[in-house]
Length: 344
Image (tube, rainbow, N blue to C red; front, side, top):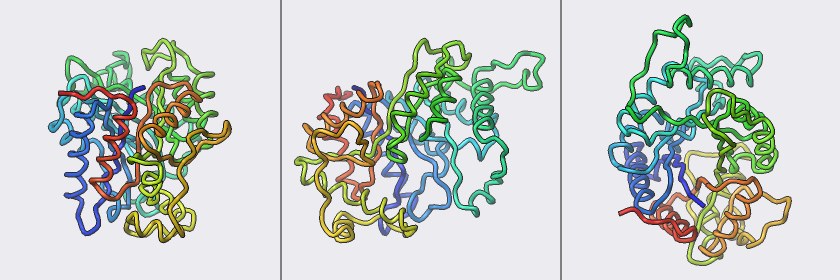
């Protein structure tokens, strides 16, 4: 199984966005050395005190220059905020900077009313699913120059390399996103750390609707992966403690009290009233945890169980580990668990 990483560019306590971006670039170089397949960066708005990653297309330019072989991409560009042509242009430039190794992950999300207003986002779209489908189609057509000559956009072009264009992915957390990806014949990544209970339904919708003649993906069969919140440590108990900030952050979100800082491991354990229980080595058939943890042996089994349920051969790792050294150590142990081949 391949492993990949999505990085949220968290702002370290007492630090700045500059520190967050430096850590993201270091994490990308670390993932490349360990043998991870791809390294994606996320997009969030109005959360600058906690998450600095607002513009993947900018941050990826720096990541491209710091790496040589790992695939890089967006997890995701939120299309409801932007012009499809501008997105295609940005990722054409990235393909020119990192020829043949750029992924364009496309999703959608509304932020706070204030951030949406500031971005000029229209929340009154009559049919959001159809709007999203049209935006994805437009981005891919612009990227590939697939508009016919008599189309209003037929004479437009975007920059890029001879090895491009960027590879499009549909990202989502619902069966609707899986259906869109399938009908367009595109690759699909499900955000299992957002709505874990929908993973199997989303992939069922993806496969049932998959159309190799959809004209966009160039795929003969469905291809997908699942993003999971996962951390590893030397023992199951240590990994459960390392998972505590993710559990505490989720409880804060449920209460609507996220705050400006991610709790440290010690603070999270205190908030939770104790360290979380270790993730069982064998999951119930109907269980899809929001986050998982374990020793290399345990986490290997957990990732394989989840991958087998939806029939994928790649998992993308997301985490909520505020300590940078702990986060990098977790990535190293995950790479060890899945027998990744280090790059020289």
